[in-house]
Amino acid sequence: MEPAIVEYFAELQCSRQWKGFLRVLAEEFVEQLSEADLRALMLRLGARFARATPLPACRTLDELQIAMGRVWVGQDWGWVTLEEGPENLRISHFCAPLFTAFGPASTAWAPAFLEGAYQEWFRQSHAGDLQVRQATAPDATGSFELRLEAA
Image: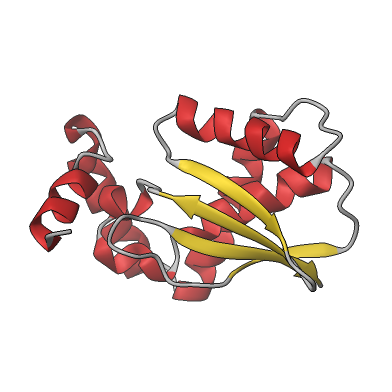
């Protein structure tokens, strides 16, 4: 697909009414906080979001994926797939609006919001001592992978 087309659709991921505000907020964050502090802040915000948006009880991984997807799709935050592997669970989040909202420089810290949200939802689902970690960098569409694995 043409990069211009991808960029066009990516820009639609964040409402124009919020984009300017969120960009300057991100600039202020970067000026005032280290990358590690920004990641920690976004982790806490993601966990807070998940506590404010609890999932229904789920008995299977498919049910959990559907429940998570309903939250994200319902808020125009993309969608998620969960895939079991031999050593971890792959969490693929597609079309997150974070990078359009906060700008390209946010790719180092903004994904921690989703790490925190998924971590909290798995905690609520009694996942034990497993940890959600970012596994890939976001691509041009705001899609990237995380892993749920042993801490």
